[in-house]
Length: 421
Image 1 (cartoon, helix red, strand yellow):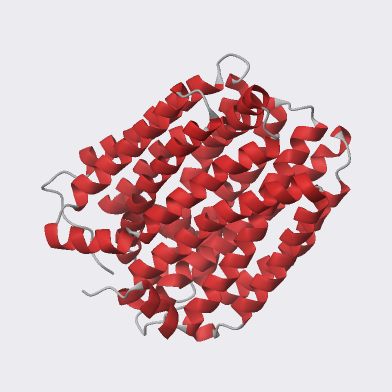
Image 2: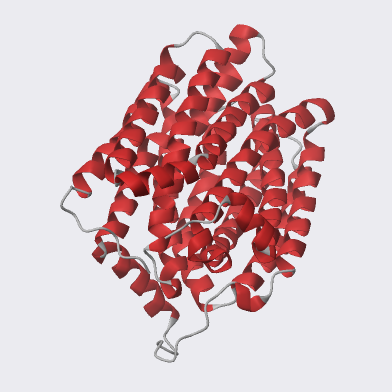
């Protein structure tokens, strides 16, 4: 099957362009918020590792817990309306960070972060479930790569701009930009017709099922479908290492290299997230040509396994380098490798899922990954009292690389290819 190029998809599909534009604006604001909120927590808590750990838990765990519920919700109700309502609600919540003035107000930052990412689970669930309907099968690879690459490109641009804006103008400006971005995103989603984001119900489709039955169906499918379970297990294993990255960047960039080399803490952290975003974006953008090569050679299994192993080893080497710039380079290369792998993997996964259950499975997978991510992030913040950030970096890379080992074990040469929905 021929896959559309990026330009063919964007030029010929107005509805997808609107979804992409909305994500672009809201993700830019999200990363302004992340750098500013993290800096604000660091400032008012006197750089407490525990305060940073709680902030990351507030970002990750609510998303993880709500993802399966959100996935079931967006499979039952209007995906378009879910995206619009959650964007409007997040506009108000984003402004609450303006009330954090000292350590006694940290609870406001934590509650606001929890609410933002709870609603984010619903928005992402609706967006990810709707995207294959907007792109069609021929545009799915390009659409997946564009949605994820722009998401991570905005990690790079938003982190850089957020770090600069926070240092130059203060954190309040970043929070206001974040709130405005949600309103613009809601408008772009509003421009998409309702019938474009979900397949019409089949005559033989089940009706009047309970919410709990639909939720259970998603869990059962994930466990019984071999390929879905492989992706679920593999991503959780990856998160056992990847969950440390927030603390690694905060302590190695914002504390260690900032003190050793005289960096502004916000800018040092922003540089690392910028490298992460640029690396993943590069990987995503070369995924189309990579997929053509993989279609021709049939080497999907070895490609996914070895790229996962390679990216973890490269990241682990970062624990041995003496400067921020060398570490930044290794971060960039590692994320570029995993970026191209993820685009290929996610496209295979989305193509294997039926539309009526896609929201549940994709959010369940994401939720399980984020659960591990959040637990590891908090555990890593506690470990900072006992080990160095460099040791944590090495452990993070090695654990992430084991995801490739799991892939090789689960997807043996004789295993059946995933069914295409």
